[in-house]
Length: 220
Image (cartoon, rainbow, N blue to C red; front, top):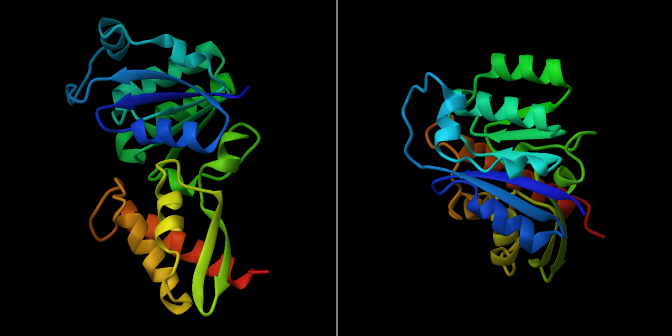
């Protein structure tokens, strides 16, 4: 059985755990970080030890870390590499991770490290399969009747669960209105990606809009 490790922090990561359990047969092991931590952590290894951080999360081949802190993320990457984790997936974007340090750890250990602004951009590779074949950049199959969306099947969806939410709520919407509506539904889920003009929430909405357009074009 495939085991997925999830490191949660505050409100982040728990929806991923729920989505994995609901939409796959993967087993999940978790470790929790406190919501509030110092902005700068001089000795992150010692800090993790002081938290009694549950290292059993690294028994998984694939680990998703919502540590959302450059110092903690690098320390977690070192522990993951030492434990033999095959793939470390880090949501939150480069601002929450020391990309240069993570690259060094990856090259030294052979562990694949992927830093994504949002998890709905995740694509499969030889390290993160089979997780990224089910969770990541959305892939849909759609059926229409009388000019409206009759059914949406999620082949692959965002790890937060927003794709499955959209697939349910979009039923009954006129075909011509459905793609932009899909993007809005994902953002209203609510998507926890960064806001603002260039925020990841817009990328998430656009990905789902394009996924529905492609599904409509390929409708059998």
